[in-house]
Amino acid sequence: MLREVRLALGSNLGDREMHLESARGLIGDSILTSMQCSAIHQTEPVGPPQGRYLNQVIRGNYDQEPLSLLQQCQAIEHALGRKRTQRWGPRTIDIDILTFGQLQWQDESLTIPHPRIEERYFVLAPWAQLEPEFEVPTLARTVQQLLDRLQDRIPEETGS
Image (cartoon, rainbow, N blue to C red):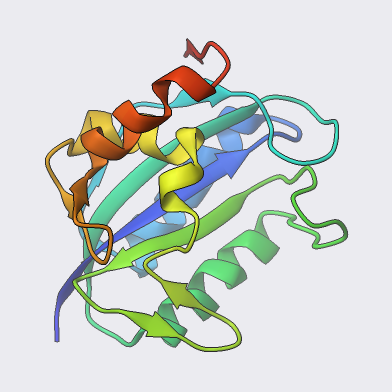
């Protein structure tokens, strides 16, 4: 069954723009059809001290199961040099599954919708640019409403 999915991309090591571009290319070539992308946003990191991130949200159609999508995203991360050494640490590329149609899924390796969407300015800001009126499954709020709730709690963002 074809489902519309949303992915968050982030990079803060090396040539950040190239890593995002490479990830988008690989995702568009092998995973998603009818892909649309938000603008790229630069944001402060969450977690240990590290460089600023470039972030982007993409949406597109996918015709396999959630765990297949997770495996394909992790294969792209690996191909682009991602090393999982520190939780929330710096990375060449990070690809998170935000939503998978209206599906709610949870097992030891994957939770859909992503469990921290409503806390993540670096996801909501680019996503709101792409589709502000999308209602996030399980949260009963639009992307723009979630972003508005965070506006007083986040550091100033600089776009790129």
